[in-house]
Image 1 (cartoon, rainbow, N blue to C red):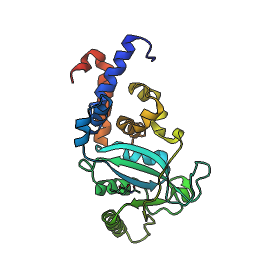
Image 2 (cartoon, helix red, strand yellow):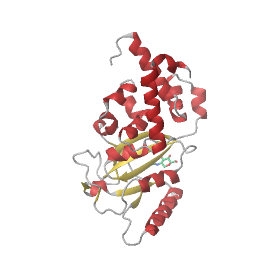
Image 3 (cartoon, helix red, strand yellow):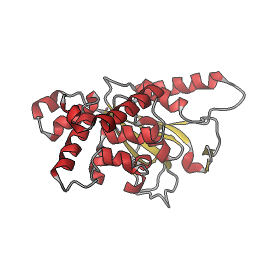
Image 4 (cartoon, protein in one colour):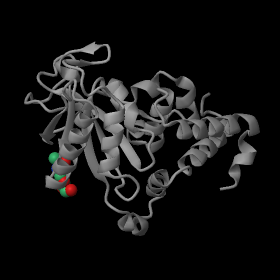
Length: 248
Ligand SMILES: *[C@@H]1O[C@H](CO)[C@@H](O)[C@H](O)[C@H]1NC(C)=O
């Protein structure tokens, strides 16, 4: 699909509008686009959390689907090398930065997602990926988060004592965003979904809440309920066509 004729432009607009209206976080982004500074000021400030749980392609997709997650970014954290790169990340771990609305999802809930989405007892790797860069880390900012992280790790360890939970808890230092080709990696392997979003420019795609969600959907890592809702929404668009989607 190109955007060179009016029908496609309209379709583009409607599809993006419907998707962006789908949840509260996305609506915030939409309102920014049409610039409403008064409303923006009353929006609660977003919080940021960083986790390492194996390949950052997958980690980004693990968190992207949850309501309240506004933005995800793949990157490097936990090491000392300045300006790490994919082929020379030094002592960093592949990580995901999650920007979230604390009124919709809490750090505690993000911790639950973290624990249930990887093997915290696997030594020197995650799944098929072997190496220090795939180690498991919860990054914390402040005593509250450190306390919550420590308590959740203890709880996880209690589930079985036959092996050690190797997850580290570290003070959050610098998070280095990864190169663009590693952002929304799963979504970029799905041209159809990119098209449904109107083939956003790279920078917009990286910041997009719907991009984070569809990245997760493409990797089939959404919780079943949200995966189904998204399926239904996509089928609806394909079946009804654009005129029916105007009522919002
Ligand atoms: C830690 O949290 C504070 C306040 O919530 C924030 O201003 C600061 O940027 C955070 N630090 C890092 C390294 O993200």
